Image (cartoon, rainbow, N blue to C red; front, side, top):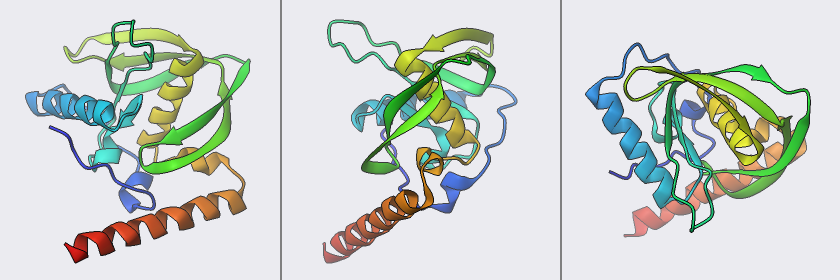
Length: 176
């Protein structure tokens, strides 16, 4: 099921999410809904707070080549346990901040530990776009958006655009 994605500024996007004690059938269904929503958007990552759920769950799939099989990953309670000193900069976007992009510098590689759909602990080192994506999504679980890395003026400008977008959408919905 495709779920609606919250648009910034929404107070739910700024909340720190609760850890997942165990993977229940409801949380497994939520994870599948999140993957469906992410692919539909389309995006490469999605965090539970973006669909209004304050749980520490993210999904991602950074495979962009149509000739390569997708690699959807569901991460419960993801945590970065190591970061490289090398940095990389990517032009980031966010499904909760549509059509807005900015260069964000982050560690080039990270090692992440999480619980998978079976409740087993997994660990993997991510680099390149995967590293950027997992850090971006984990930030969501801590109530942080990519625009929080920007200078205040740029952040305010993007926030005003999102407020206008939300007003326009509300007007359109009201006109139906």
